[in-house]
Image (cartoon, rainbow, N blue to C red; front, side):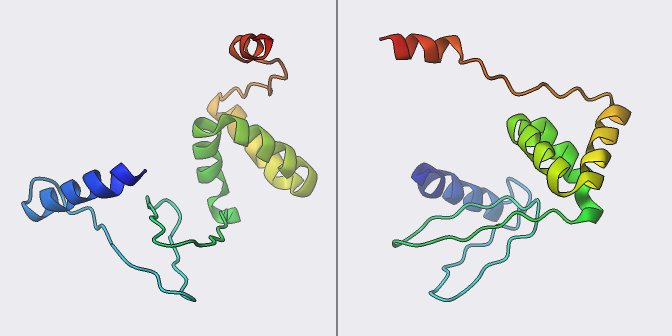
Length: 127
């Protein structure tokens, strides 16, 4: 992770300054004790802690954005999508129904969570 800050960020900033790449709007800040930083949904971000710290983070999915977020999660975070769908069925059945309808409308097939251990894990455990 430190390579990102010691190599990639300086290279990106240099390329931006020399107009080799588009301005990506990179913001660098040092967050002082007691300060809060809000990162809007969909914004790429990285954090380098300069001292010991505690982070409190929360992912928020507004109902108005649910289907957009659902499509993103089910594609990129398949296991998490299965867990989320299970929780939605229990707590927010209307959103679970919307997710299932979205899957059907899009022709998206979700695989059930496998309870079998992978061959790799079995071999490792046998050693």
